[in-house]
Amino acid sequence: MTTTVLAEDRLDQIFHALANRTRRALVARLAQGTAKVTDLAEPFGMSLAAISKHLIVLENAGIVRRTVSGRVHICALNAGPLATADQWLTAYGAFWDEKLDSFARYLEDTADPTKE
Image (cartoon, rainbow, N blue to C red; front, side):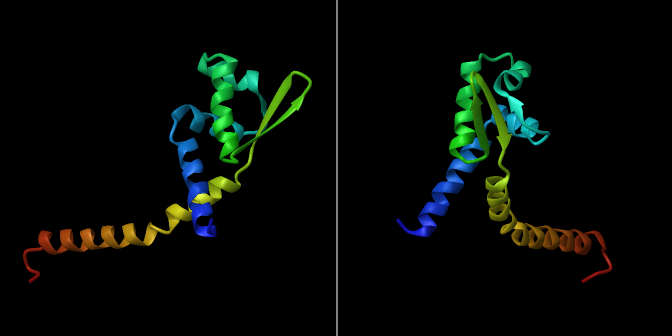
């Protein structure tokens, strides 16, 4: 496989992981610091198994790292994949800036009847 295909597969995993609101909420919580799985599950009213499934998706995307100490599972955020997604999105910033600038010029031109 080429490097480009691997990078695209990685982006697919990252965006898939972030496509779910529960997983985005887990990422937001972990941005505040590490947490036990039991603590992560509490605000959602979900079973530990359900939260664990979400965490596995985040782990597969590399966004979350889990360490196990006895029966306690501790999760931490790994922001590297989020930076990868941000870089991909940022590449389209110039496109949207140009579209919005063009729209602003259009509005200015049509709003001023003295301009020809």
